Length: 311
Image 1 (tube, rainbow, N blue to C red):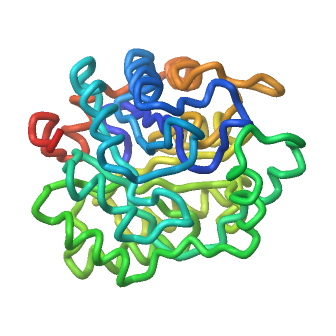
Image 2 (cartoon, helix red, strand yellow; image 1 turned 180 degrees about the horizontal axis):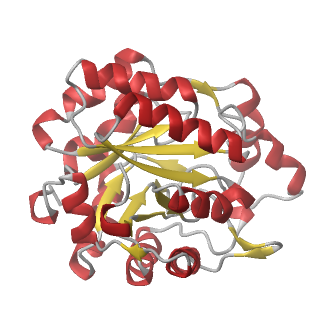
Image 3 (cartoon, rainbow, N blue to C red; image 1 turned 90 degrees about the horizontal axis):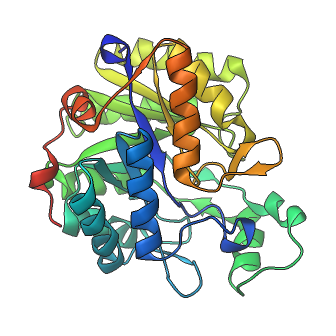
């Protein structure tokens, strides 16, 4: 489904679990920093903010619902941006642990991964010699023997557990087969249209960032879902803005943010999530597109509204 009336949804993924504190001094860690980063991204033009949590003392990924509640409440009080929680968490966590913030706090949107996969972060070790915290190096190093587990049973468990919450899902697809898994759950009635398909490019273990890969994802999604979905993309690392521009030209939406890339340009660290959102917005507007507001996104994706959450 094309962006409604030329309006493109910008999602901002604020902190994530891929990068570690050593990699950028601008990565938000504490609940206050995450809230401030999300509010800034919304002010810059993001309609949706995608949120992970970190342990405030050392930046370790966590799915503690109390931390999610802290920053979600502050974001909600300061902005009408759509709040989107991760159910991916980190590949080191159980699916039950990953689900807790969404199950208890009932956001408008939550992410949902569509398949188990190798998820290689170990190549980042070659770029950094000294780490701030003891957990960082082993976390990255062990990823060459780590499976990010998302079985059919896991996916069904998340969908069935959240059915009463009326939370809708950002369907994260790291490869072509993940689109077919989404179609399977649509056929089973556990997913409801319109789907919000987030295609992920450039993660080691998933589909690559070549333009042919992007077009193959879009063609396959069009064939499987027709007018029953909205397409969005994220490009990891240096691929972020190029793939965002490709998506917009192809009728899709975009995701940026420090979860996906620490960079604003070649050799230039982004100093904030808002910097990346502002750049994406500028590119979109120069291409002739309008950026969707949070209410536009709610209408397009048929969301339950910001008043109907549990925080």
